[in-house]
Image (tube, rainbow, N blue to C red; front, side):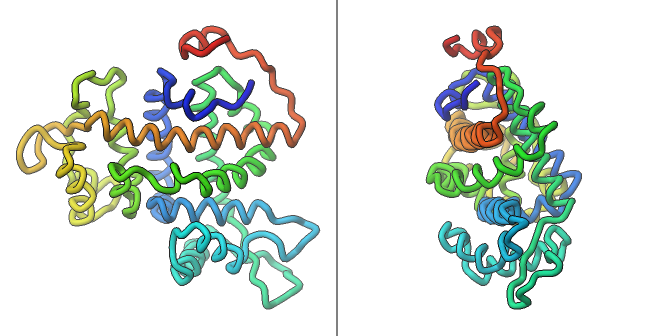
Length: 306
């Protein structure tokens, strides 16, 4: 078994299906831990969260000053250009206050504050990773989820690897303008997941993809977003003809354009490809043997060579 390329993932006939699957998975995480989801719901916060989590996992027992410190985190955030120095330090403080980060005890140098993720944060990130492994398995019949479930080292190696890859990938770091207006807004990413989860299994080949009746007040109630912020997110996409309602005043059935959905899928394919590379990097580092044979029915369904 080898990593799937971004092109293979994006062109796979099952990719829209796993996009719906991962959207529903992420919505489930949000509903179970809404406070944690809010702290990584915008794309900037997503980049910061994965970066700090990677730093925490890279802590070594033989180096008590290794791992996540404010200085290292700020350096990464400034390199990403995701936020200002003050915003980065405030973000760390917020995570500590919400008990998603805590101080590592018995640090020999009291001038250095080393932080680590709490069990709640670890479980949420691990669940995020496993959900993506399950989706990738549907594309080629692999055993990523099974292997990662029995060997937690895979996640601990793969998460920092994928975080670094995605932070360096301009396609992932700078989403298309068509969806960027959502992603740069707090909880806009969750709104997009909610829209994608409603796409029918067999979308209409016409210009518009009908996803059913959906009102902004309903979205606001589910994701705890003000009506003003929601209107701001949708206005640009409506003006550009990327989505809309079939009745005036945002009533009736909501439709999405194929360009809107296609841009989202292309952007997401970068994440899935990076995670697949990260998984294979982890099993290679650990010396875990995985059968090179992929089930033929799935290959035939995917249209990939055997």
